[in-house]
Image (cartoon, rainbow, N blue to C red; front, side, top):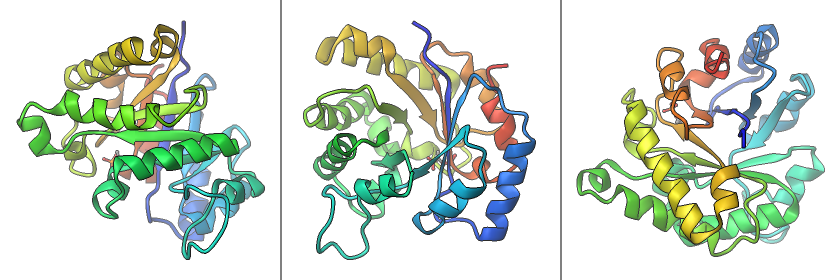
Length: 247
Ligand code: PEP
């Protein structure tokens, strides 16, 4: 089966209306490979603004959502609210949510399950820290993070799994294509054994961690890398070249 190439831009807590206008301008100028699914992860206060000026072929994603539809949860937004505003995607489990805001596997899995039940598509992030890799625990960590989600969801149809080694995020230290491919391959084997061979075959597993216009083409050649989640470079015109890495 051919998995569609997927490139997400995670703007994190960056952007003003003026800067968003500039990003939208280079995205519109492209040209972007029409065979690639392109999604931008926008700070919540700018979601509807970005959506209103982006071409309809580029989807907008939130960077977080809570695990219930509404209630006394000051500062949170729910999947129902995102859908009410025409936002189809959410990024959940990003390493900054895990490591800066203390979100654990259980909470992330609950958020993923609720977002899917509500009707959102989810970019679910996993990845090991440097000390975990150095201790030889990469597989154990990413399998544990993935299992927590698998235990709570009924279907992987609307999930894109982002493998983002924490040591490569925002550090300029990219995993080599071989390092990334090795983990993606092991994840696919885990899905085959623990979920189903069909999900292992169809699930888009994307790589994130200091992807640039300079390294995207080599990473995109690996057979189990189905796209990217891009932080810093998604704010720059280089993002167009990353989207087009398969060309
Ligand atoms: C990210 O935020 O998911 C990310 C991978 O960031 P960067 O590309 O800046 O490493």
